[in-house]
Length: 191
Image (tube, rainbow, N blue to C red; front, side, top):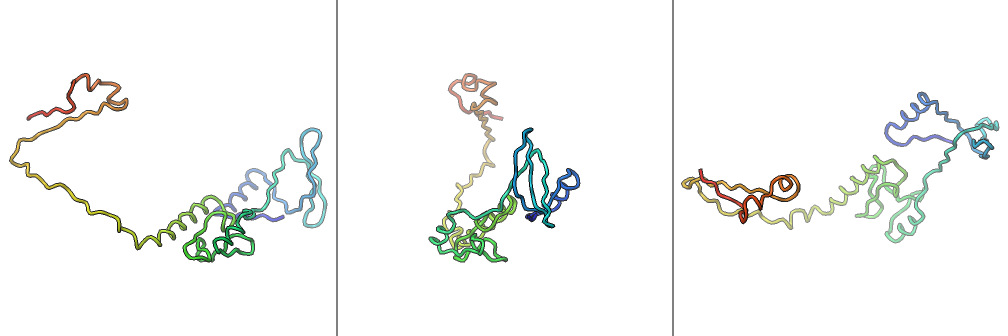
């Protein structure tokens, strides 16, 4: 009956479908769909001017509006959350992830139907809001990094260690490191 293109650039998608791919959008109410002998479908619909139309199609895709999950009512009661008039979790226009109860945040289809990019954005916002409650604990469990005491090597001869790993297939698949140097894991080479 009505066409809504929710989300960024979805209007352009509909316009392209209509202009470039000959998709027709017809405001109507579908009355019946009858299968025909050759496999196509006869679609009977009523247009806005109340005229009844019969048209044959190869394929018909039916879609319905998105409704809230059946368990949202009981969950909202258990958590003490308000629902909006569509029975989704109620939020504010300028705080789309904040519920009626402090510390509980909502995203994706719990607040309203939406596309994937909007869902990802709101999930990030909900995580950021939840992280605000953790700011008082931030850094309380960190330990001070203690480094070993520095040694002055300026008066010593240079020492170089060569360590070859024989794990995996890069070196271990080409060189038999333990076989080439039996019993030797590292070797000092003086300059």
